[in-house]
Length: 262
Image (cartoon, rainbow, N blue to C red; front, side, top):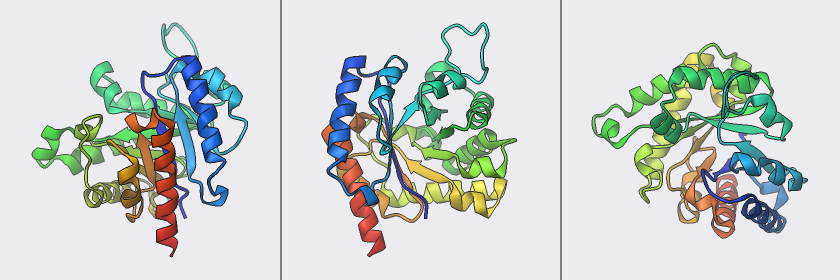
């Protein structure tokens, strides 16, 4: 059984004080939920809030993630943050390859592969994002484009490290637009991604790797998404910025697990 993950990517939002208040409120909300059914909850604040948020994450029910990293350990790389620095701050996960990084900052598949290797070498888990534009989907290129992204991201990585990694499928046309890829299609694409992982690394890695869906995930959509065969959780954007919405998504994940187990 793959343990579900509900991860909140705060992007460029929240001051340090707002981040701390949110985390404290989220901890209180999670304490009322069934501990045995909780998914792995992950939050990714901005870099400047990581230290303060880390200091109040004394419980194991919430993990800390960074939104990006650089693959070199140190050097003349102004403005970058290394994996070792993020590990020192208590990060268990690092998001890489998000469509906004690819689009606005010209990140390539090769760069994402370097980041994945550096993250895994530091015993942190990468959340490797992939996804297609509306134009690519309309041209029938969804599967080939995403398969290419996955193969490039995982190149040269051991089967064991691939198995403990996380992939997030985010259709770019559904990020922040209010549009949602329907659950059946999201599951189809994620199953295709799992097949690509099997092709690259074998069945054991494909069965173990957790693949999330992201793209305007809401409390009203998560339960249906989580009852699909291959969706292992969600990478949440806008709905992760309000405790009530994010807690609602976590609760929906718990309900879906109950349905699947019944």
